[in-house]
Amino acid sequence: MEFDLENPLDNSHALLQWDAVASLFHIESQHTPSHTYFHSLKASNFNISVRRELISLISKFSCSLDPLVSYLSINYLDRFLSNHGILKQKAWALRLLAISCISLASKMIKPGYSAIDTQALLMNDGGIIFETQTMQRMEGLILGALEWRMRSITPFSFLTFFITLICVKHPMEQVLKKRVAEIIFKSQGEIKLLEFKPSIIAASALLCASHELFPFQYQSFSAAISNCLYVKKENMVKCYNVIQEVVGMEMEEEECVINEVSSSGTPVNVLDLDHKFSLSSESEKTNNNGGMAIVVDDDDEEALQEKKDFIINKRRKMNNNNNNQTVHVSRIAQC
Figure (tube, rainbow, N blue to C red):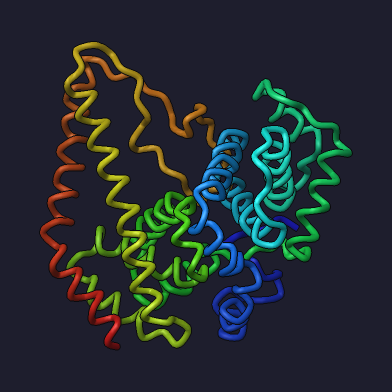
């Protein structure tokens, strides 16, 4: 059965039935790394560097696959490391762990995925190629650490529920959902988010996206989510602030790239700033940096300026709303 991150329960449950929603909140902690893991990362730069290297490998190997494969792979990775401990920084061991997580995630999301497909990913990379039996043994270790809980409960599992609370109408619902997905994907590598449950990450990412897309309705949206029985408001405020930092860094990177290209007099290859991960099951072809390569020449100058103006205006709006945002978040804590 194909696994859907938005509906990790089996098909006998309707996604918005209250018993199903309650079940998600009740068991989500079984699908997250322990707090010991979070504190071990914070206490050691070595542990952070190993995790960062593993995430980089997963991103590289899975760049031609559905982006949800990469997300699920990193979920498996963190849960494995939480149970098993940080590996020694040996290139072959990290490579084996990364590709094994991808293999397991691919088998969950894409029916018919086989060891041959995994071998093809390694061959395309040009590095060490492992025997099928070696990867199967590694997969067995991962499965044991995860206690065979492969249908991970992630922030995506709570999106439909929280969006229903704020009553956004179609088609803006899809626009909002896409932006929330972008934020969740972008934030996964931030170790500070390992402290929070998937539901809190989902609620915080939704608030962040709502503040960007619906600034005048943000206060009512935040009130609706904060009044949810399953949401611990203090944790949501902390998580929201972490995600806002990640989004702020993302916008600064975009501005730097735009400014660099604008000041160049020759064609330059850059990452397509419009390329974002989506919840589509379609695979997206990307380059090794995880983005789509484009060439900017003189004919694109007008479009480039429009993109630059959009980012600048977006930054200005966020800055102008910063004080209001602080007030709204504080109100959440007081609810």
